[in-house]
Length: 180
Image (cartoon, helix red, strand yellow):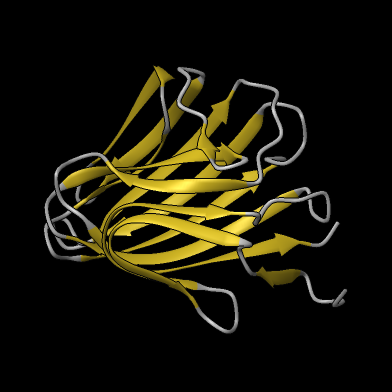
């Protein structure tokens, strides 16, 4: 195991609905025109916490979501709670409980988005926490900063990226394990 703080991980497999998705030689995943992209086998007992770095472009404005996965099945229960701060020229906050997925950002039509997701304990059989920060090209630059929890005490090995509208996303995603 490397002595560096972040270790780039390679999914054991991916699943997608859309045009294409490919695992590169270094472990990142590039995807094109996908309505769902799932990365399997990225969370394990080797690490407690993970960082996901992603860039994407959406074809239509939508809310961008993530669901944890175990053995190829998404966790779609209503145990997700979000506390978010968002804005560009003005900033507002909101809280949403009883949701069926983590909320990552509002994406804007055909504009680049960037996301950093920090997962805390997704492979441990305890509630998972997520902190995500996104920049979206809405009104110049729009920040979307979200603290979230998933209340189910299950062990997960992956996650799915889910635009929640009829459009699709194109981009690249990489998962890093944080050394214990």
